[in-house]
Image 1 (tube, rainbow, N blue to C red):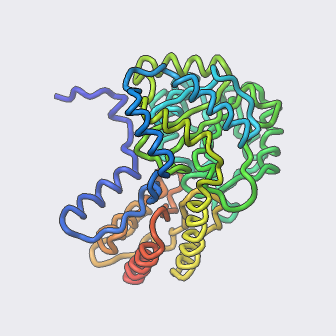
Image 2 (cartoon, rainbow, N blue to C red):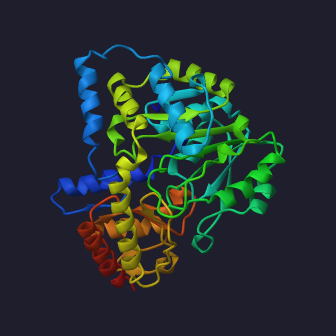
Length: 397
Protein backbone atom coordinates (compact mmCIF):
# COMPACT_ATOMS: atom_id res chain seq x y z
CA UNK A 1 0.00 0.00 0.00
CA UNK A 2 1.31 3.45 -0.92
CA UNK A 3 0.99 5.91 1.95
CA UNK A 4 2.81 8.76 0.20
CA UNK A 5 1.06 11.99 -0.71
CA UNK A 6 0.47 13.07 -4.29
CA UNK A 7 2.54 16.13 -3.49
CA UNK A 8 5.69 14.22 -2.66
CA UNK A 9 5.14 11.75 -5.49
CA UNK A 10 5.26 14.64 -7.97
CA UNK A 11 8.31 16.23 -6.35
CA UNK A 12 11.54 15.52 -8.26
CA UNK A 13 14.75 14.66 -6.44
CA UNK A 14 17.40 17.37 -6.72
CA UNK A 15 19.58 16.40 -9.71
CA UNK A 16 22.69 17.88 -8.09
CA UNK A 17 22.18 15.81 -4.94
CA UNK A 18 21.23 12.76 -7.00
CA UNK A 19 24.44 12.90 -9.05
CA UNK A 20 26.50 13.43 -5.91
CA UNK A 21 24.82 10.40 -4.33
CA UNK A 22 25.65 8.25 -7.35
CA UNK A 23 29.24 9.50 -7.28
CA UNK A 24 29.55 8.59 -3.60
CA UNK A 25 28.16 5.11 -4.27
CA UNK A 26 30.92 4.52 -6.85
CA UNK A 27 33.52 5.94 -4.47
CA UNK A 28 32.35 3.46 -1.83
CA UNK A 29 33.18 0.70 -4.34
CA UNK A 30 36.76 1.97 -4.54
CA UNK A 31 36.41 3.85 -7.85
CA UNK A 32 38.30 7.14 -8.13
CA UNK A 33 35.53 9.64 -8.90
CA UNK A 34 36.00 13.37 -9.45
CA UNK A 35 32.83 15.06 -8.24
CA UNK A 36 32.09 18.31 -10.08
CA UNK A 37 28.34 18.10 -9.49
CA UNK A 38 28.03 19.98 -6.20
CA UNK A 39 28.32 23.72 -5.68
CA UNK A 40 30.44 23.64 -2.54
CA UNK A 41 33.62 25.70 -2.04
CA UNK A 42 36.62 23.56 -1.17
CA UNK A 43 37.93 26.26 1.18
CA UNK A 44 37.71 26.17 4.97
CA UNK A 45 35.60 28.69 6.84
CA UNK A 46 37.87 31.65 7.80
CA UNK A 47 39.44 31.28 11.23
CA UNK A 48 38.06 34.54 12.62
CA UNK A 49 34.53 33.26 12.01
CA UNK A 50 35.27 29.90 13.64
CA UNK A 51 36.68 31.67 16.70
CA UNK A 52 33.45 33.61 17.17
CA UNK A 53 31.50 30.33 17.06
CA UNK A 54 33.77 28.82 19.72
CA UNK A 55 33.29 31.91 21.84
CA UNK A 56 29.51 31.62 21.47
CA UNK A 57 29.65 28.06 22.77
CA UNK A 58 31.72 29.17 25.78
CA UNK A 59 29.19 31.95 26.43
CA UNK A 60 26.33 29.43 26.41
CA UNK A 61 24.45 30.56 23.34
CA UNK A 62 22.62 27.25 23.50
CA UNK A 63 18.98 28.22 23.86
CA UNK A 64 16.13 28.65 21.40
CA UNK A 65 16.58 31.67 19.17
CA UNK A 66 13.96 34.17 17.94
CA UNK A 67 12.25 32.85 14.79
CA UNK A 68 13.66 35.53 12.43
CA UNK A 69 17.07 35.52 14.11
CA UNK A 70 18.77 37.44 16.89
CA UNK A 71 18.14 41.18 16.79
CA UNK A 72 21.86 41.92 16.40
CA UNK A 73 22.01 39.47 13.48
CA UNK A 74 19.10 41.30 11.82
CA UNK A 75 20.98 44.57 12.40
CA UNK A 76 24.16 43.08 10.89
CA UNK A 77 22.19 42.08 7.78
CA UNK A 78 20.65 45.58 7.57
CA UNK A 79 24.14 47.11 7.70
CA UNK A 80 25.50 44.64 5.14
CA UNK A 81 22.65 45.36 2.71
CA UNK A 82 23.28 49.11 3.02
CA UNK A 83 27.07 48.82 2.75
CA UNK A 84 27.27 46.40 -0.16
CA UNK A 85 23.97 46.73 -2.02
CA UNK A 86 22.55 50.20 -1.36
CA UNK A 87 19.43 48.55 0.09
CA UNK A 88 17.61 50.14 3.02
CA UNK A 89 15.75 47.82 5.38
CA UNK A 90 14.61 47.86 8.98
CA UNK A 91 15.59 44.92 11.22
CA UNK A 92 11.96 43.78 11.23
CA UNK A 93 12.20 43.27 7.47
CA UNK A 94 15.04 40.74 7.85
CA UNK A 95 14.39 37.02 8.29
CA UNK A 96 17.28 34.61 8.91
CA UNK A 97 16.73 30.97 8.00
CA UNK A 98 18.50 27.63 7.86
CA UNK A 99 20.13 28.43 4.53
CA UNK A 100 19.06 30.60 1.59
CA UNK A 101 17.12 27.60 0.26
CA UNK A 102 14.77 27.86 3.24
CA UNK A 103 14.52 31.62 2.74
CA UNK A 104 13.27 31.02 -0.81
CA UNK A 105 10.78 28.28 0.04
CA UNK A 106 9.43 30.46 2.88
CA UNK A 107 8.91 33.24 0.34
CA UNK A 108 7.25 30.99 -2.24
CA UNK A 109 4.89 29.58 0.38
CA UNK A 110 4.12 33.10 1.60
CA UNK A 111 3.13 34.61 -1.76
CA UNK A 112 2.28 31.93 -4.38
CA UNK A 113 -1.34 30.77 -4.67
CA UNK A 114 -2.52 27.85 -6.84
CA UNK A 115 -2.43 28.97 -10.47
CA UNK A 116 -0.14 31.95 -9.88
CA UNK A 117 2.57 32.31 -12.51
CA UNK A 118 6.22 32.68 -11.55
CA UNK A 119 8.68 33.69 -14.27
CA UNK A 120 12.05 31.95 -14.25
CA UNK A 121 14.83 32.88 -16.68
CA UNK A 122 16.25 29.55 -17.84
CA UNK A 123 18.68 28.11 -16.98
CA UNK A 124 17.52 28.49 -13.38
CA UNK A 125 18.61 26.95 -10.09
CA UNK A 126 17.41 23.39 -9.81
CA UNK A 127 15.06 23.88 -6.83
CA UNK A 128 13.15 26.96 -8.01
CA UNK A 129 10.75 25.11 -10.30
CA UNK A 130 10.07 22.33 -7.78
CA UNK A 131 9.34 24.85 -5.02
CA UNK A 132 6.83 26.62 -7.24
CA UNK A 133 5.18 23.38 -8.37
CA UNK A 134 5.01 22.13 -4.78
CA UNK A 135 2.93 25.21 -3.98
CA UNK A 136 0.72 24.69 -7.06
CA UNK A 137 2.11 27.66 -8.91
CA UNK A 138 2.86 27.64 -12.62
CA UNK A 139 6.42 27.99 -13.89
CA UNK A 140 6.87 30.32 -16.85
CA UNK A 141 10.32 29.59 -18.24
CA UNK A 142 12.18 32.09 -20.44
CA UNK A 143 14.77 30.33 -22.60
CA UNK A 144 18.26 31.71 -23.15
CA UNK A 145 21.50 30.23 -24.52
CA UNK A 146 25.26 30.63 -24.38
CA UNK A 147 25.23 33.08 -27.31
CA UNK A 148 23.32 35.65 -25.23
CA UNK A 149 25.40 34.82 -22.12
CA UNK A 150 22.19 33.24 -20.79
CA UNK A 151 20.49 36.62 -20.28
CA UNK A 152 16.89 37.47 -21.01
CA UNK A 153 15.89 40.67 -22.79
CA UNK A 154 13.37 43.27 -21.60
CA UNK A 155 11.06 42.31 -24.47
CA UNK A 156 11.17 38.63 -23.42
CA UNK A 157 10.20 39.66 -19.91
CA UNK A 158 7.44 41.98 -21.06
CA UNK A 159 5.92 39.33 -23.32
CA UNK A 160 5.90 36.80 -20.47
CA UNK A 161 4.05 38.93 -17.94
CA UNK A 162 0.31 38.34 -17.66
CA UNK A 163 -2.35 39.35 -15.12
CA UNK A 164 -1.61 36.02 -13.38
CA UNK A 165 2.11 36.75 -12.93
CA UNK A 166 2.91 36.83 -9.21
CA UNK A 167 6.70 36.88 -9.16
CA UNK A 168 9.93 36.98 -11.14
CA UNK A 169 12.62 34.81 -9.54
CA UNK A 170 16.27 34.71 -10.59
CA UNK A 171 19.80 34.31 -9.24
CA UNK A 172 22.47 36.92 -9.90
CA UNK A 173 25.21 35.76 -10.33
CA UNK A 174 23.41 32.74 -11.72
CA UNK A 175 23.52 29.12 -10.71
CA UNK A 176 24.03 27.17 -13.02
CA UNK A 177 25.56 29.46 -15.66
CA UNK A 178 27.65 31.97 -13.70
CA UNK A 179 25.97 34.75 -15.68
CA UNK A 180 25.91 38.16 -13.96
CA UNK A 181 23.56 40.91 -15.06
CA UNK A 182 25.08 44.39 -15.16
CA UNK A 183 23.50 47.47 -13.64
CA UNK A 184 22.50 48.67 -17.12
CA UNK A 185 20.84 45.33 -17.93
CA UNK A 186 18.96 45.21 -14.62
CA UNK A 187 17.78 48.79 -14.98
CA UNK A 188 16.41 47.88 -18.42
CA UNK A 189 14.48 44.98 -16.90
CA UNK A 190 13.43 47.34 -14.12
CA UNK A 191 11.64 49.55 -16.65
CA UNK A 192 9.43 46.57 -17.49
CA UNK A 193 8.70 45.92 -13.82
CA UNK A 194 7.77 49.57 -13.29
CA UNK A 195 5.00 49.12 -15.86
CA UNK A 196 3.75 45.99 -14.05
CA UNK A 197 3.27 46.86 -10.38
CA UNK A 198 1.51 43.55 -9.64
CA UNK A 199 4.77 41.55 -10.07
CA UNK A 200 7.06 40.76 -7.15
CA UNK A 201 10.81 40.38 -7.80
CA UNK A 202 13.04 37.92 -5.95
CA UNK A 203 16.77 38.38 -6.44
CA UNK A 204 18.84 35.45 -5.15
CA UNK A 205 22.32 36.91 -4.58
CA UNK A 206 24.02 34.03 -2.78
CA UNK A 207 27.06 34.24 -5.12
CA UNK A 208 27.51 37.98 -4.60
CA UNK A 209 31.07 37.70 -3.29
CA UNK A 210 32.19 35.44 -6.14
CA UNK A 211 32.21 37.85 -9.07
CA UNK A 212 34.87 38.54 -11.67
CA UNK A 213 33.79 41.34 -14.01
CA UNK A 214 32.16 44.61 -13.10
CA UNK A 215 30.44 45.60 -9.88
CA UNK A 216 27.58 43.63 -8.37
CA UNK A 217 24.27 45.52 -8.60
CA UNK A 218 21.12 44.63 -6.67
CA UNK A 219 17.88 45.21 -8.54
CA UNK A 220 16.20 46.11 -5.25
CA UNK A 221 18.32 49.27 -5.08
CA UNK A 222 16.15 50.75 -7.86
CA UNK A 223 14.02 53.03 -5.69
CA UNK A 224 10.74 52.38 -7.53
CA UNK A 225 11.12 48.61 -7.01
CA UNK A 226 12.26 48.24 -3.39
CA UNK A 227 8.69 47.92 -2.07
CA UNK A 228 8.16 44.71 -4.05
CA UNK A 229 11.65 43.25 -4.21
CA UNK A 230 12.86 40.44 -1.97
CA UNK A 231 16.63 40.08 -1.77
CA UNK A 232 17.97 36.69 -0.67
CA UNK A 233 21.54 35.99 0.41
CA UNK A 234 23.53 33.80 2.78
CA UNK A 235 26.95 32.69 3.95
CA UNK A 236 27.40 29.33 2.23
CA UNK A 237 29.25 30.43 -0.91
CA UNK A 238 31.00 33.70 -0.12
CA UNK A 239 32.32 32.64 3.28
CA UNK A 240 32.67 28.89 2.61
CA UNK A 241 30.07 28.10 5.29
CA UNK A 242 27.90 25.53 3.52
CA UNK A 243 27.45 23.27 6.54
CA UNK A 244 26.69 26.13 8.91
CA UNK A 245 23.30 26.71 7.21
CA UNK A 246 22.52 30.41 7.42
CA UNK A 247 20.55 32.32 4.80
CA UNK A 248 18.54 35.50 5.04
CA UNK A 249 16.19 37.74 3.13
CA UNK A 250 15.15 41.37 3.17
CA UNK A 251 11.54 41.93 2.15
CA UNK A 252 8.59 44.30 2.38
CA UNK A 253 7.27 44.22 5.93
CA UNK A 254 4.14 42.14 5.27
CA UNK A 255 6.10 39.52 3.33
CA UNK A 256 8.82 39.33 5.99
CA UNK A 257 6.14 38.82 8.65
CA UNK A 258 4.55 36.06 6.56
CA UNK A 259 7.91 34.30 6.23
CA UNK A 260 8.35 34.48 10.03
CA UNK A 261 4.87 33.00 10.46
CA UNK A 262 5.68 30.08 8.15
CA UNK A 263 9.12 29.45 9.62
CA UNK A 264 7.67 29.51 13.12
CA UNK A 265 5.56 26.47 12.24
CA UNK A 266 8.41 24.56 10.56
CA UNK A 267 11.89 25.05 11.98
CA UNK A 268 11.75 28.16 14.19
CA UNK A 269 14.99 30.16 14.41
CA UNK A 270 18.35 29.11 12.93
CA UNK A 271 21.15 27.57 15.00
CA UNK A 272 22.32 29.89 17.79
CA UNK A 273 26.04 29.23 17.26
CA UNK A 274 25.76 29.74 13.51
CA UNK A 275 24.04 33.07 14.08
CA UNK A 276 26.84 34.36 16.30
CA UNK A 277 29.38 33.33 13.65
CA UNK A 278 27.21 34.97 10.97
CA UNK A 279 27.27 38.31 12.78
CA UNK A 280 31.07 38.24 12.72
CA UNK A 281 31.13 37.34 9.01
CA UNK A 282 28.59 39.99 7.99
CA UNK A 283 30.33 42.74 9.93
CA UNK A 284 33.71 41.93 8.35
CA UNK A 285 35.11 43.86 5.40
CA UNK A 286 34.17 41.87 2.26
CA UNK A 287 37.83 42.04 1.20
CA UNK A 288 38.55 39.18 3.63
CA UNK A 289 37.21 36.75 1.02
CA UNK A 290 39.19 38.25 -1.87
CA UNK A 291 41.80 35.42 -1.88
CA UNK A 292 39.02 32.89 -2.43
CA UNK A 293 37.56 35.01 -5.22
CA UNK A 294 40.98 35.25 -6.87
CA UNK A 295 41.36 31.47 -6.74
CA UNK A 296 37.95 30.95 -8.36
CA UNK A 297 38.86 33.37 -11.14
CA UNK A 298 42.03 31.40 -11.92
CA UNK A 299 40.04 28.17 -11.93
CA UNK A 300 37.38 29.64 -14.19
CA UNK A 301 39.94 30.75 -16.76
CA UNK A 302 41.70 27.39 -16.59
CA UNK A 303 38.48 25.41 -17.05
CA UNK A 304 37.31 27.56 -19.96
CA UNK A 305 40.64 27.20 -21.75
CA UNK A 306 40.64 23.42 -21.26
CA UNK A 307 36.99 22.94 -22.27
CA UNK A 308 37.55 24.93 -25.46
CA UNK A 309 39.96 22.16 -26.48
CA UNK A 310 37.17 19.56 -26.20
CA UNK A 311 35.54 19.03 -29.62
CA UNK A 312 31.99 20.28 -30.18
CA UNK A 313 31.65 21.93 -26.77
CA UNK A 314 30.28 25.50 -26.64
CA UNK A 315 30.84 27.70 -23.58
CA UNK A 316 30.25 31.26 -22.45
CA UNK A 317 32.48 33.37 -20.19
CA UNK A 318 30.69 33.46 -16.82
CA UNK A 319 30.98 36.62 -14.74
CA UNK A 320 30.51 35.02 -11.34
CA UNK A 321 29.78 31.95 -9.19
CA UNK A 322 31.88 28.81 -9.84
CA UNK A 323 30.13 26.97 -12.64
CA UNK A 324 30.58 26.40 -16.35
CA UNK A 325 27.51 25.43 -18.37
CA UNK A 326 28.61 24.04 -21.75
CA UNK A 327 26.27 23.18 -24.61
CA UNK A 328 26.74 19.48 -25.47
CA UNK A 329 23.91 18.56 -27.84
CA UNK A 330 26.32 17.52 -30.61
CA UNK A 331 26.97 14.34 -28.59
CA UNK A 332 23.30 13.35 -28.50
CA UNK A 333 22.64 10.29 -30.64
CA UNK A 334 26.21 8.96 -30.33
CA UNK A 335 27.08 5.57 -28.89
CA UNK A 336 29.71 3.71 -26.93
CA UNK A 337 29.12 -0.01 -27.24
CA UNK A 338 25.55 -0.62 -26.11
CA UNK A 339 25.31 2.80 -24.45
CA UNK A 340 23.29 5.35 -26.46
CA UNK A 341 23.48 9.04 -25.53
CA UNK A 342 19.92 10.32 -25.97
CA UNK A 343 20.21 13.46 -23.84
CA UNK A 344 22.31 15.34 -21.29
CA UNK A 345 21.32 12.98 -18.49
CA UNK A 346 22.58 10.00 -20.51
CA UNK A 347 25.78 11.91 -21.23
CA UNK A 348 26.33 12.65 -17.55
CA UNK A 349 25.74 9.01 -16.63
CA UNK A 350 28.20 7.94 -19.34
CA UNK A 351 30.83 10.40 -18.10
CA UNK A 352 30.27 9.17 -14.54
CA UNK A 353 30.48 5.47 -15.33
CA UNK A 354 33.15 5.64 -18.03
CA UNK A 355 35.10 8.83 -17.37
CA UNK A 356 34.53 8.75 -13.60
CA UNK A 357 33.59 12.42 -13.46
CA UNK A 358 30.31 13.47 -11.82
CA UNK A 359 28.50 16.35 -13.54
CA UNK A 360 24.90 17.61 -13.49
CA UNK A 361 22.56 17.39 -16.52
CA UNK A 362 21.07 20.67 -17.69
CA UNK A 363 17.49 19.46 -17.86
CA UNK A 364 17.22 19.98 -14.12
CA UNK A 365 17.97 23.66 -14.72
CA UNK A 366 15.49 24.05 -17.58
CA UNK A 367 18.19 23.71 -20.26
CA UNK A 368 18.24 20.12 -21.59
CA UNK A 369 21.08 20.65 -24.10
CA UNK A 370 23.62 21.59 -21.42
CA UNK A 371 25.57 20.14 -18.51
CA UNK A 372 26.92 21.88 -15.41
CA UNK A 373 30.49 21.64 -14.11
CA UNK A 374 31.43 23.08 -10.73
CA UNK A 375 34.99 24.38 -10.52
CA UNK A 376 34.89 24.65 -6.73
CA UNK A 377 37.90 22.37 -6.62
CA UNK A 378 41.66 22.52 -7.17
CA UNK A 379 43.38 23.33 -10.47
CA UNK A 380 45.01 19.87 -10.55
CA UNK A 381 41.63 18.20 -10.18
CA UNK A 382 40.15 20.43 -12.88
CA UNK A 383 42.92 19.39 -15.28
CA UNK A 384 42.42 15.71 -14.53
CA UNK A 385 38.63 15.98 -14.82
CA UNK A 386 38.74 17.62 -18.26
CA UNK A 387 41.31 15.06 -19.42
CA UNK A 388 38.91 12.27 -18.43
CA UNK A 389 35.93 14.03 -20.04
CA UNK A 390 37.84 14.58 -23.28
CA UNK A 391 38.98 10.96 -23.46
CA UNK A 392 35.48 9.62 -22.77
CA UNK A 393 33.87 11.89 -25.38
CA UNK A 394 36.41 10.87 -28.04
CA UNK A 395 35.25 7.28 -27.55
CA UNK A 396 31.68 8.18 -28.55
CA UNK A 397 30.92 7.34 -32.18
